[in-house]
Amino acid sequence: MRFRSLAPAILISGAAFLVACQRSAPSTAPAMASGSSNNAAPVMPNGVTPQLVALGDSLFSGGSCQRCHGNGGVGGENGPSLKTGSWLHADGSFDALVRVITAGVPREALKDSTRRPMRGRGGPMNLTDEHVRAVSAYVWSISRDKK
Ligand code: HEC
Picture (cartoon, rainbow, N blue to C red):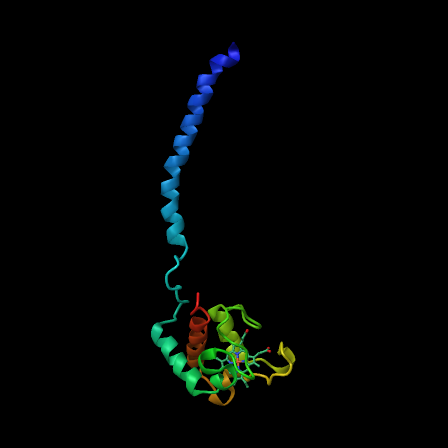
């Protein structure tokens, strides 16, 4: 008897709980959407512009990079592909690319010891900091091309 008289109260509070959930759903959804990037073009890292990527493209293609990494960074005899999105030395972030391209990959750090080491700053290209940022921006962008 007592239990039965409680039932409506339980039902009502249950319904109130459901209403509360439904109310909160639409208000949290936009907050989540604005916090994460959608599936459109990836947001460029700080300070990276299409112009910087274009400069990096011409430095990469005109300089030593493509001799080892292939035209467009597809991979070559002495250099891994830079387009696969998986990395041997960098985690793929812009900052990590800047670090590895500035420092190069010395022989003892090579993952594939049959390759020749990569010199820092493009070796004979002797890239300035700004040009390292440019080629890094280019590598960053081609590594995301296909996704
Ligand atoms: C002499 C050949 C050679 C040249 C020139 C060269 N690289 Fe490399 N690069 C390599 C090798 C070898 C590795 C490391 C592969 C390994 O560890 O087996 C590497 C690694 C890299 C990585 C790290 C890849 C990863 O998976 O973490 C990046 C980024 C890169 N090179 C960009 C460049 C850029 C940009 C240039 C031009 C400024 C350049 N490389 C010039 C041979 C070269």
